[in-house]
Image 1 (cartoon, one colour):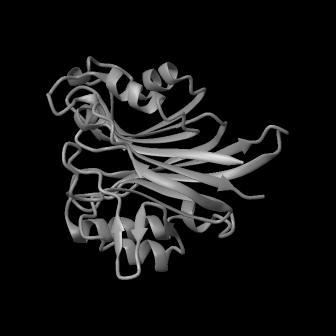
Image 2 (tube, rainbow, N blue to C red):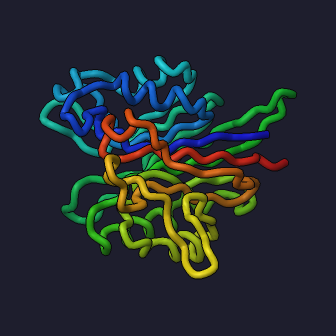
Length: 250
């Protein structure tokens, strides 16, 4: 069966025109009919986003019956972090703290999802939705925390597993850690005979860096991967969403 996954740093639904317009984000996501959506920079109760519970409201508007929010940063009023939306039941979720020292709080949300096909056969899917820091050393240490976390090490290495989100990895320095250290493959790399290039997603109006990525392993076969190139996506956030389609293997 096919499985479509999107990762999108929505920048609190505040676009490059500085307008808070969650309808643009909802419109973009709705056009791609995903099964699982990984969002970063999602507000809850913050004045800048009209005190909305954005994870809940986006899930409801898109018709997703299941969602989980992992908040990392507390504001004077409200908080924000990552959110995972699913058309299939989320049977377990936990927010993994990836904060390093006195750096800005960061996290990775782990959700265990029970995917069901048309015959109602169940397939486990492990999702890790992260947003890494701004310095190279910080990102390396955060990735090490994830790699050693109980949530990741307890997973059957043959199970379908996705690690996606905003890696802030301009120069692909983390690629070896995820590919060699965590036995993952990168769905969002374009591999040629001479070199590997990530799909570019940032800044959205003229992308130069592949900050938003999806890695995977286990019972998943890559079918396609692309960044949205719609005009509205160039304005709705400072990142472009990445859309990846897999075949879920038995």
